[in-house]
Length: 222
Length: 86
Image (cartoon, rainbow over all chains, first blue to last red; front, side, top):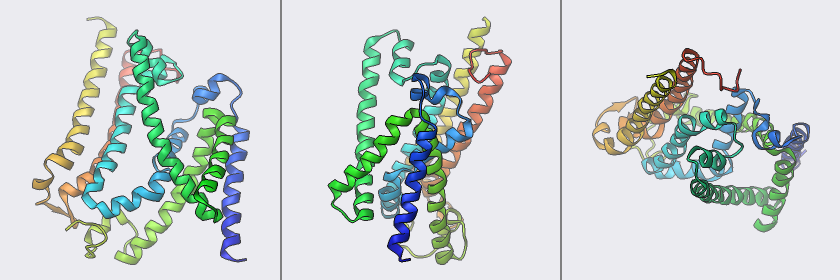
């Protein structure tokens, strides 16, 4: 079996797993569609959130950007990880206690104002569209390379697959497919990172040992 | 001061404490003080660079766990019954 067949088999199998999970965990009511029924275990939820953190954009472009920008790339790292701290401290606990489905709903109720709600919706749309553009670009590039078709066709196929399990599964389906993606991605990230680090520095933990590596081109440290 | 106000006051002071650390390690150590911290070296890394690339993120993760743990204690102390976990 050549490499290409093997790639198709493995990638195909992961998609079957995602869609299977989405079907198994499909939302059966509004509560499950928007907030996954509110009873996902914290560890499972953390895995799903981590899968968002290391999504297509980080996988394909950010890792390379940060390696080449060196210190300048830190703003992305601190920015998007720091945002999780704000989310965990200022929004998530109250959203849960309040029992609302969406952030704008909560903001509107909290400040007794329709205007605040509209502002929240506008912020949300700007943030999501920016995020989705990055993700869709990533999906398009990944699928066009994988299926050896044009970027446009790759994008369409990728969007169709995401659309199926997002609409069918709702938040519940998405959370469980994200958990599966987390497991696959953490393996896909860790294996090359450990082996590259081992080849370059003779030590398997890249974050500790790459600083001692003298090759200046790798990180613009010096 | 009644029970609700006490609960809220402890909650706010915990958030402020965490956000001060959040700001100091990322914006403070990672951006404003980066040049002076870079004179210190730690395991091959310049310290300022290390804070912006790795250190701040480790501290962010610790902060979220610390906040959750402390908030659980405060909820317990004031017998908060509006948490859907129970």
